[in-house]
Image 1: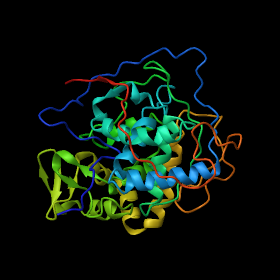
Image 2 (image 1 turned 30 degrees about the vertical axis):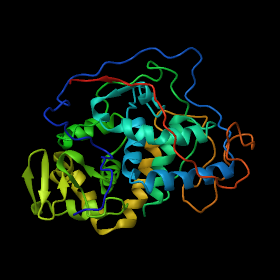
Image 3 (image 1 turned 90 degrees about the horizontal axis):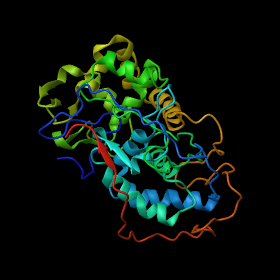
Length: 342
């Protein structure tokens, strides 16, 4: 019924078949960082490198149906941050993951050939950049993006709590408590939830919208008519087979959220503007300095607005600006340690 797509959540990960691993356990903080570790680094990507990387993301991620999953990976990497100083976008998921990360191993594997082709960029920057590129080139806003997120060195760098990602069953109060702890307000919470226009829920075998590879305000148009949905195991479906989760419905059950659902359903430009601002904030959580200059995330536009780095192509760079597509080899990856109930 729906176009072939790697279905993936942006904001909230649904249940795992036969068990619900999200109920209430308090996360454990990891407390050590590698000696002399810094949350930022200096990349050596050139303007040509950025342009070529965008083309590779378009060809090898988006056109292969992995776009929604790439956005989810960027969100899950950054979304572990809290105002207490834990977590943040440092690709620690290469070493440790939580139950809400189910399915992201495959997405990280898709990114490996890109990391091999562009070794002068960190994993954290690659994941974050890919998410921004997907949003901007799926019909969405051109979000502002800057490089220089350093990678975690091991499982203990930039520690985060094991339950620092949302639960698909949450109500409005629980969503607020979670996002307030990261510095987001009600309007930003609803705007970020609009990322559910991309992808869907594999366990329910359905997307949120009929255009799961397009970034638009269709999620809010549908959510603004909650009476069209009936409860099913694990969520809600309408007569067209499109789904919503309990955490989606929470946005129309709470008036402080619902006012923005109505706004975005009527005004796509307002949604795009608010999402772009909230996504930029999300992508830089916990990083207070050391980021480079802005890079244009739109395919076919200039590579950067003075991208940071020396201007050299760097080791393994695509260099001269002539685009050379890669043939994805088989790559191994450090096996992540999964935390959470089985």
